[in-house]
Amino acid sequence: MKRKRIIGTIVVVVLIIGVIICVKRWNIWFNNPTELSYVASPDPGRIMLTFGNDGEQSRNISWQCDAVPQKGWVELIKDSTSDTIRVSAQSKLFKTTGGQSVYYWAKLKNLVFHSNYTYRVCNGKKHSGWYRFSLPDNTTDRFSFVYFGDVQDTLHGKLKEVFTNVRHQLPKTDFYVFVGDLIERPMDCYWKHTFDLLDSISQTKPIVVSPGNHEYIKGLVNLIEDRFTYTLSYFVDSRYKDNDVFSFDYKDATIITLDSNRDIWFFFAQRKWLKEVLQKSTKKWKIVVLHHPIYSVHSKYNNLAVRAFFNPLIKEYGVDLVLEGHEHGYARMTTKTDDGQLTTPIYLVSHSSPKDYRLYFNDLYDRYGTNQKFYQNIEVSKDTLRVKAFTGDNQLYDDISIIKAKNQVKVVDNAKKIPQKLEVPGSYKIKKPKDAVKYAKEMKEWLNRAPK
Ligand SMILES: [Fe+2]
Image (cartoon, rainbow, N blue to C red; front, side, top):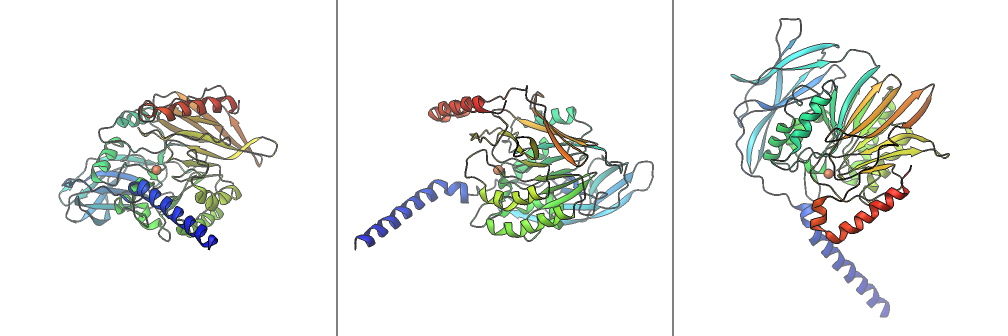
């Protein structure tokens, strides 16, 4: 009888705790705010150049036009030729309670290395302006790209300045990689804002994005919104068993984007896909991009499933760099050998969002950054891959190199003399003053024990 009463009490306590957690987390888990009504522009716009699904000489171009499907195509001219090639687009009508719009994407194949192309997108009698993009030469010795963590700008936010600055600082970058949460919410107004941020980049440099949770519709089973898939149109063909994953080769690198937002039972197929891509890759550099950090910088217990499913493969197949976001801070972790030498994989977390989250200072990491916006330039030159992280005002914040020569991997930390900037964000001090004091203490303790 006594035993029954104890079991009954435990069940009731567990149920009460479950209900309290559900009530507190309901909005975070399940609430999808209603989209404000919108009217799609009757002119072709929101153009995005991405890599394609047909090898290094393919590119996709997506755009949006009006609310009624019509014929769409890209007009493409290769420099030093007079022929205009017409490439037909596929299209999908996308509807929400806020409105409807038609998405188009055209697949450009068999482009020529070391060439410049001019293009415009067309619907009926309407067309966009002309834009240019380049294909690199067919050598493997040098390339660079920009990596951004979460963007998630608020409407009328201040990130335009950051993107314009990066475009001017790194005009020769080959492409841009985003780790997801490109938008604050899956709504037309946020997409409009994001395209405004990316203006002059999205039309001219290939963009790659791994999905973030803010691109998802929340529910018992989370679902990616089709608007994201049609915009990053390589996903239409690269989706694997309902996982929005993608990989491409660029010069001497294989770059793989995972979808870490999926529910755990989807990870079995995603892991199989990752293994196959890594096994097939013959490239010198392997880079994995995913939204959730393999080693969380938010809590000891976050993202454990992501780590359990993907990290063993990342280590086994010699992945060099893992690019991550989601936890709204900067953090860099090198792997250490048994005798304390730095090696790969290197795990990076970054963000440029106006929102800073509280970080958890995990001793596996080398350095952290808070209360700043960050962007990264990743440059491959012969045997060296070098990552430089900058704050939004172009101050060098981190600098680390991977050198691969004579079958050896060496990692050099060039940032030992760059001080870590750890500050409690002003908004945090206002919203949670008691926690802010505790957070400041944790930062101080971390700085005392951080690798020197
Ligand atoms: Fe996120």
